[in-house]
Length: 204
Image (cartoon, rainbow, N blue to C red; front, side, top):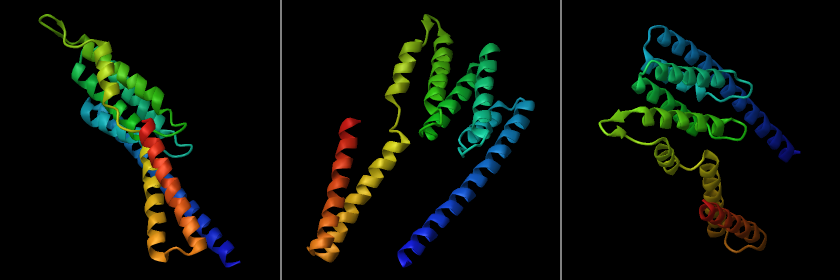
């Protein structure tokens, strides 16, 4: 019964933490969208872009604010392109790309937004012309962006989990010695962590 109570308490704590985090994200997202709109009304594009990016990064179940942040960044980028303000357009699309990279998770839509941002960056970069033509082609810009992408968030989390499993298993072996029951569990944990870590690093 004690084990069941402990599990129930742990589940309750997890739900409470999730609820608090969700409420915080919802509050922050709404505030950031409001600040983005206020800054855009004053044509303060750097500040509007910064707040819209912050809103786009406030992921929470059922929250409308990330999508609204994305839409504002996209609109600011397109509007800046239309009026020939390449600096603001690059800033908006760069913020879109940064937000996409910061919110990489299943079902978050980050891949679609990342593609939109990179296409915008490439398009603006290719439109900037020097004395002998464009400074860079759109294809070259896209290639450079793809080469600079850091590992996905889930990859980093998986590596951290595998490393913890290895350390935990080895630590348990060192602490408890070779007692049959404990040793088998610790060895399996360390081996699983090692195999997972190797599989992730070798396939990246």
